[in-house]
Amino acid sequence: MFLKGTELMFEEELQQLKDSCLYRQVKSLRSTGAVTAVWQGREIILFCGNDYLGLTRHPRVTRAAKRAIDQTGTGSGAARLISGTAEVHTQLEEKIARVRKREKALIFSAGYLANLGVLSALAGPEDLIVMDKLCHASLIDGARLSGAKLRVFPHRNYARCEEILKQESGAGRRLLVSDTVFSMDGDLADFKELIRLKQTYRCLWVADDAHGMGVLGQNGGGALEDAGVEKEADVITGTLSKALGSIGGFAAGSASLIDYLVNRARPFIFATAPAPSACAAALEALDIIEEEPEHRMMLWRNIQRMHEKLKASGWPMDLIQSPILPLMIGKEGDALALSESLLGLGYFVPAIRYPTVAKGKARLRVTVSAAHTPDQIEAFVEALNGLKTQLAEAPQP
Image (cartoon, rainbow, N blue to C red; front, side):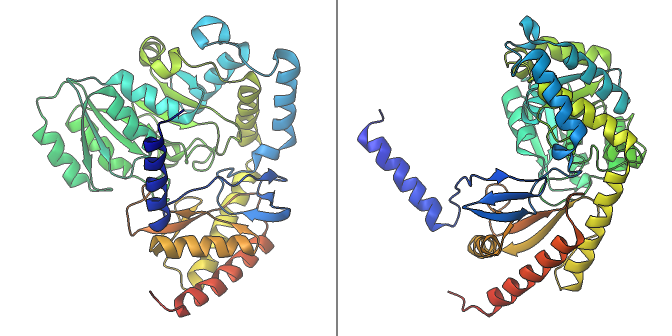
């Protein structure tokens, strides 16, 4: 048990979070579909998930997972380097390597662990990691875990990135790190600038394509495929838990680099292998993405529909780049109130607040799925606009 004083400290800090509108609580949902769930006895529609293609409910994906459970059981039983590697792990890695146009791939138990493993293995105290300020937390944590010198440049400010690389000319190995699709703003990195900086300053370019794979590209190969630069990144990381409808993460690169990760990436070496059923589901999802492009086409029709309706309603909207459409609110309390009001009307869109985003830049992060119907999108925007009017008319404290 904690000492009484320690418990009091926790309570005081939790109260500070509540007073700042930064307190978080888990909502337990019972999933009923790719974008629907039951909460407190009511069905709600999700406009916050990352199941972009609706594949978590695709019958081929669920059948593949069930077959794997029948054949191999519910878990892998050990780390990959012990007895945890099943045939489906190898098959999935080979498939990812082909899709990402790399020699080899390595899967991890989560996308978060993939980024931790890559950065902590590839950099050390004598090295330099330079990354965009809005990179995902897993990349930031991986950089810190590595012990390398970490320098951060303002979002998409590649002139500042170049200044940093010039200043740090004496570093050992240099890693240039960026998301391809930024998870909170939904915008894309400037790949031409990243490639130029990589080549000019002899960096290893690590690209996290978690929100691009399955969504962007002619064949769903991701943001780098879409831009025609898929062979330029030295390491591509990503996840199986978004468009692929499963759970896990991966890194793809040259054969020697992946072999190096097998020997150096602690989140790979010491973590239990992903469940074979999750790998079988992801493997089937990759086949579906190639064979059934209509899911991706439907997704982009829905993104266009949502974007047009939000813009017509007066919400400031940037160019469409991804399924992530942030509605900027500003004050944490306002974002929280709007989110709770939407939930009361049957729509779940959590308020995104500090530390996920900067203080004063709270938002609703609306995400679109191929599984949404036009009627659901129409009704959501109508509900949102009614609440926005109420929020604007409410007296300010």
